[in-house]
Every structure is written in C-alpha cells, then in structure tokens.
Length: 232
Length: 78
Image (cartoon, rainbow over all chains, first blue to last red):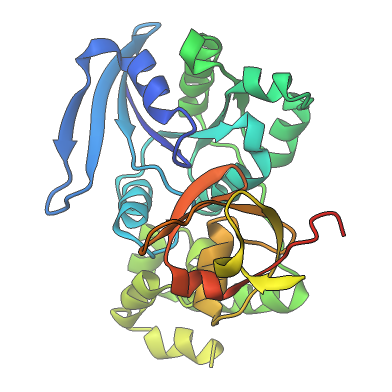
C-alpha cells in the first residue's frame, strides 16, 4: 500500500528538515504544472509501507491570497492526500494553530507534529500534548527534527491515521453564523458535483468569507442563485 | 502613545491596537499575526522600500503604506 502524505506548516517551522529526515537523499525538486512555486517530493519506507511525501510551500493560512497558499490549498482539496502532516512550531503555538484549524475545516486527515519541542521546553513552556490532541481530535507528536527525535513516532501516527479517518471536531462560529452556514450547506448539497468535490461546511464558511476561488466554483453551479441568495 | 507602525523606531517593541482597513485587509493581516494585543517590533527600516517587521516570532517584509494602517501602542505594558 502507498500512503500519500503532504507536509504543511508556517514558514520556518522546520518543514524541510522533517522532509529531508523522512525522505533522506532521495528528494528531488519538481514543479507544479503551470506554476512557478515549487513543491518537493520524496519517498520513505516505514514498516513495509511506501510513503510518498510532498513538501508544500510554507504558508500562514489557506485563503486564496497568494499563489503559494493556493497551491497548498489546492493540493489538499483536489489531490486529497491520505494524511496531512501539519508541522507546528511548539515555541509559537498560538500563531501556528491558526493553520491547523483551517486544515481541520478542510476536513484533511491531519497529524500534528509539534516541532522545535526542545526550544519550547527551554523557553519554559509546558505543553499538554495529550490534551491538545484531545481538543483538536487528531494525533499530536512532539518532535525535534534537527536531532531526529520523534520522527519514528510521527511515522507511526501517519500509518495509523492513514487506516481510518475519525475526526469529528468542528469549531463553532456562534449562533448567527452557524444558522447561515447550515442554510448554505443545504443549498450546496443539492449540487452533487460541488458537494462531492469539497467539504460542504468548508465551502459554506468560505462563501461567507467571500473567498474568490470558492465563489468562482459557486458561479459554475446550477444552484448558484439559490446559494448566493442566502448571503445577500 | 498610539501611532501607525510605520512611525515606530527600529528595535522598539509595541502592541497592536487595530488595523484600519477593509475586511479583506484586516483578515489578511490577522492571518499574518497582526491581531489586537500582538507584540511587534521594527527590525530594519533604514532604506526606502519594505520594512522588516517581527510579529509573533515571524519576520515579514511589509510596505510602508500598509504599516500606516496598523495602529500600535508604544506603551507595551499598559
């Protein structure tokens, strides 16, 4: 079995260090079709599994602002990797968890790598890894990539996570927004094509946010007037 | 004292009060870390062109026009 894994995270969290540690010297640089921003691909083997690893551009969010964000987002939405490793800088949790939340909203199969765990500890941070994992509803693995610490555990979590998705955690945006979200979701569900390609809740949130790329998709839907009517 | 981030001297810490801009700009800057209460510091601002800013442990290069829209408080501990 081949497991397709994407690496994502803020810039400068150690993504490439983890990528190189996982894939060794076999990494090569490739280009996205028609895009100038590059992704890296590599292969690693763990317990007889062939794991294809793709390193996505570093990004702070998954909105449609810049080409690198869009590439990262398109890869997760359209290529649907089996597992997304979200590399989080443990010494800067608050900022990093924003991207984590966006990945969860995209209904990606997330495994969080709490990298630079040694730096966080030296700063005196005490992170309750189990509690974080419980709140997020996904596996959380502390790592120190530069020393190769935690990588085995990370691969273990990836292989385990690839076997089944069980995450159900969602973040509530309050009563008023939630009513709109569920209305939009209902309208989206009528369009089987659209609702099979994207998570409906994510689409509904992005429509409310006025996300240009998502609105373009809605424009092509036969139910577009019904969907857009809700946000008028 | 509340001033635009563009006027903050190098290496002095300040606290973000608000972003004066449209919905899109406010969201974009908050994604980059400019949320109320976030600590910011201008690292390099000695030539025309983008200014190097540290916000929440990330270094970003931002234009001066944009920095005029980010209002900060120089009294960090207030």
